[in-house]
Image (cartoon, rainbow over all chains, first blue to last red):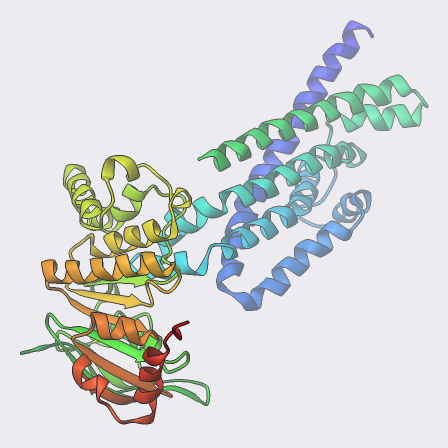
Length: 205
Length: 248
């Protein structure tokens, strides 16, 4: 492996990480509040979860393709890739947020209300701390999946480690494929380990 | 004497089902009123109307002369201590944090909260040094219920509401908790409304017993008179006391 390739691996890894971090930040910012909201409005649950479910069933390559002609969010490049990755990451976070909050013991919630805690106080002091572990588990699953899926972003000009993989497939060069796949796998393992550690620390408390 | 809590023709219905039917009843300051009845008699519903967890669908419930609907919800709830069978301690809070929760919400300063928690734990028979830092999962059922009582007393509410608080503990622990309830009542002189289906418990703890049947008040009497009551439902409950083990 020459110097030029090492530099490219570093650069594309950085690009890949950026794609994942930006997508996850947006997905968390959308899915956690949405998950909380659907615990309050049972009628919306079907629609919100249904939407997120459908997004996950679309094959990833097709989803990236579908987005290209969409105005504002579409086109070729990183923005489209991020939109697709966000849509993919929503479901596990959304579902786990809902399950985590609905899982809070009814007696705990009743005594919180009876002590005169406001809806906001109950959310921040009772529901979120008790749901945190479940929500984190959802974020962990979404993150690991996103790291893998982000390799497809290269297909629509989104950059990242997928650039090596697609180039390798095109030129039947397994060194190139490995140059993309190995770092991606390493990032996924590291993220899984790190988030798993955070999750366990939460249980220990 | 002035009524601290008064039910005026209070009813509660869910759809077509009438759970409470025109309950009228006044609870005087310092008394310990037991709402006795079978499952589904409406006793828990009546209790939840006192601190505004439920509101009557007809009639009204007055607390200190003001209808619960006119109270500011948080103020009304803070006026009451509430203890339920499932206890509902916060599993992610230590014993001290659970007991200190309402004082903390009321923005007491920390030294005052710490002193209060310490005093309350002693009052319910738990050594603060041993228990303050534990989590609810590290306690026995009886200890948890003691913490539940301490938490309800924390901000010195004037009325205590108990919903079958000792129903889920073993009989020996239950007797200990009942005795402690009596001691606390004597010591603090607080008004208490106590829901139970256990006639022994009612006779032991009540200054007056209100017997509910199918959502209506069947009988309201002090324990001594309750023992002589002639109604069907009162007799059905008193029959629970008669069973004896045959001598060999």
